[in-house]
Length: 408
Image (cartoon, rainbow, N blue to C red):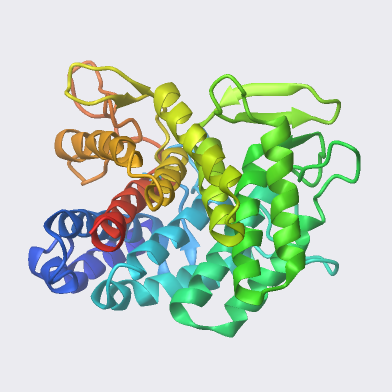
């Protein structure tokens, strides 16, 4: 019954919002640069797809996968974990930053997704924190709690405050920041742990974006403690998690100092953006130099030569990659060499949009090779993660923002 309601709701929303409607996006982005308008329209189109296929407004509920039922071995309904849920919120935020028209278009969906965090709120009395899994009732979250999840959540409440102006969002962001700081390891190594219930490693993903979050909170409050913490976290990452051979960041370091040398786009992207942010605040050149070195290193590490006329990206996670693009966009403000990185990145994204979209309108997570296919050559649509689908939309939104408000 819920599935039928969801399908009916999606049909109504598609009709009322004019899914993929050229007139709709033309009105939203009238006067935009041509490239920015194209990307903004694609972002809205893909976000509509997420809303129509993953979201139930009446219960503030997000599915984890499409198809919503039967994708897993037990044929159960999929429920979004808080990390992919947060990307759905972030995508709404990005669209709200593009124009008044797009902000009005997404406003109700955006506010409702923020309200839906209540189902992930941890049932505890020491800190305001959010658990990985959704509870059946508001404020009753229990179980695994990740510091990196809470970094992204605090960021989204800060973003919402800046766009929507609700002081409550700002207060929530500040409260969650204190939970994040409680994860700082009180030993000689330092760093913010990844996972509260098993404090076994200090990961780049729980530290690098925290630098940006604390630095932004400093900009809002001028409270020196936030900037001091941002620099402390940054120094931990730069000293312990950077590969000095290419300035690309490793994944994590264990409590006994053993480094896991996996490299992911989002970790380095976050440190590029962190370096730029600290440069903006302190005007210390070293931070910008670090960011430039990591941007070049990541470009050489994560992009391969190809016969398509551009370098193909070798990491197939749209959300991981989004954070790298964000780093490049921030870098471009002070270093036009970053344009080459951005243009190769967008070539990958455009190729996937123009060549690999499914009949339903979904883009694949793998921008280079597209969806998997069956023996008859038909696209296999199975277990499409909301994280990937929302991030595809936000990638276009970030490019639209870049071309309209930064490069232009």
